[in-house]
Image 1 (spheres, helix red, strand yellow):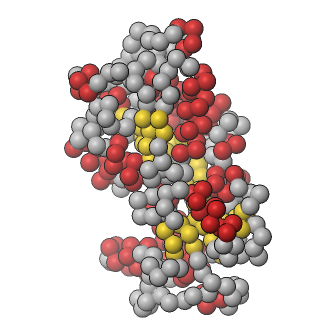
Image 2 (image 1 turned 60 degrees about the vertical axis):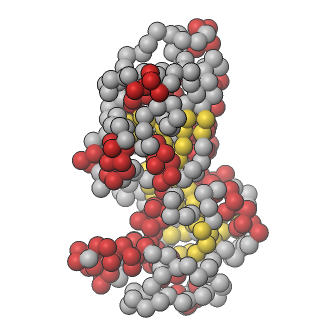
Image 3 (image 1 turned 180 degrees about the vertical axis):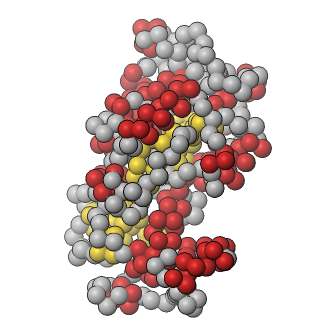
Length: 364
């Protein structure tokens, strides 16, 4: 299985700064008791930033949270991209900084170090589920079946021999592929989806060449450059953080391909279809069992330092980690989320309830 079951991992700045670093017991109930069912959801609105891929899942949880606790302030959810969101999240402790960061990849060790340097040390990791990085095309277009090797040969800035990549059509990559222009719309470097694209597709294709695979051991920096540096001549088009915009462009340009999370493909199956990768289509079961090569975990990162000042944080996490939300038949399935294995969900829910900080030693 390709998916690693990860071990999971109006109050102002003065009140937050005064908190100790340990998770707090639930304070006395705030808000309307009848509306909250005895759960404390008082305090300022939760602010959530980050991944455009995780955005629809977190938005759905926020909507259900508000229905369950109408006395709570409505969570504010912003799509900023994984990298940009984590940078905002790591900016510091206080009401001017986000409480949660959505991430379509795992947080990096360097990002945790940035958080720590700014006083954010109680980072709680929640694996909310699984997703596939889908390549999609217009439903009206001729079916295209690719391999990770094909995608690498089409989009890498350099050929395996190190020379400039100038191929223009798919049949130049492989004579068995159609004679049509290569154009792939995808995420920018700030996106977690771009990181996943590089790791799960570009590096996978690159490693099919023994000389490039060997380069990883001798010169990792050169390996990364050769494997993940994308062309800048219009073949790969950075389409921003708005995945819905990519969907619109694919409909307008049926010969192009788009790269985004499976949830956006699933939501737009009336207009789009998935491109098979290494013989496997981006579908729910294939992503869940790891047979689809571009399967990945989705996360949210929670700032434990804000738990005292924003008791609604605990209630929000309880909603997110409930089987009614992220379970195999939960409401997030309708948004395209694939449930994590039972053991991962159980361990994650326990870590979230206890506000257990992430172990930085487990990160790259």
